[in-house]
Image (tube, rainbow, N blue to C red):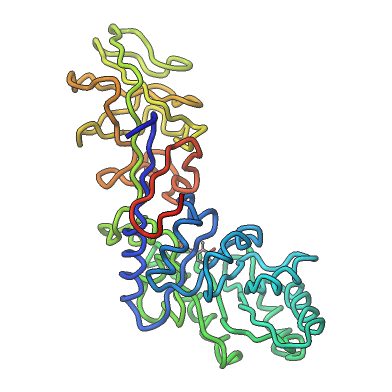
Length: 363
Ligand SMILES: *Cc1c(COP(=O)(O)O)cnc(C)c1O
């Protein structure tokens, strides 16, 4: 390992997670690779998933789709946020599939159909409870009452998004499924897409024709009430820069939020909140030294964090602490930080020395 920090991303594990999810149901399995594949590097992750057999990819922004398009020949690449005014022609030019999220999107795509004089594919997002993006029930009714609004638009997929899929007993899951199923007969030629990662574990009726997992591909637990069925894909380690001995009563870090109760050995590493090692981990996180938990003490600062390694007299500068790994994964760090694993992954910093295992190596 060179450099003070190393972020290992296992593309084989990500591909294996995709195959595991795909084997769960008879339908197709896509992949959410938005936000740079949840911070893990879409340029590496997306081709690895394509190799595994994935044919349907989802990003949030048009700008995320552009660099990925040449890496995903033949695959559908869909833009979840729809079409901003002025963007429609770029979708056509780059063979991108817009997810139509409002009547405004529908109108922009219909105008593009007219300009090109041919049918254009699209995904129709019906809001069944998120109140965020997606056609409202009123907008869906408008489409039903005036089918000409969709003239020339080839609705390939009817899509909706679950609000509490990670809570299997949430009543909203079934309410959303019912609303979604009520819309299906209106688009008999369209495939259906409802489940994100956790939604896939709610049963076959949620999986629909095309599932859209993201988190589970990257090793986050899609079944928070049970053991994680996915393979870990991320390992973050940091080398100890210094170890110092402090006396009882001495404090560590900004604002002296930790006071040594005894003579203590404090190991400093080069990861801080500028690296997505969140400040809310202050006095709460643990890392692993040789597989043993060591507590973070004091405030996480911008570039540094400090751990109490008093119980490990063999620890030396240059040794590694594992900040995220199989024994202490992104979900566990998230619990310590008071957030979710998604935020931990998407916050992973740019200063970490990134190293990809398996898949398609790109320099
Ligand atoms: C992000 C996203 C997904 C993937 O969700 P995960 O919980 O990460 O599996 C699926 N669908 C939509 C619309 C999304 O925004």
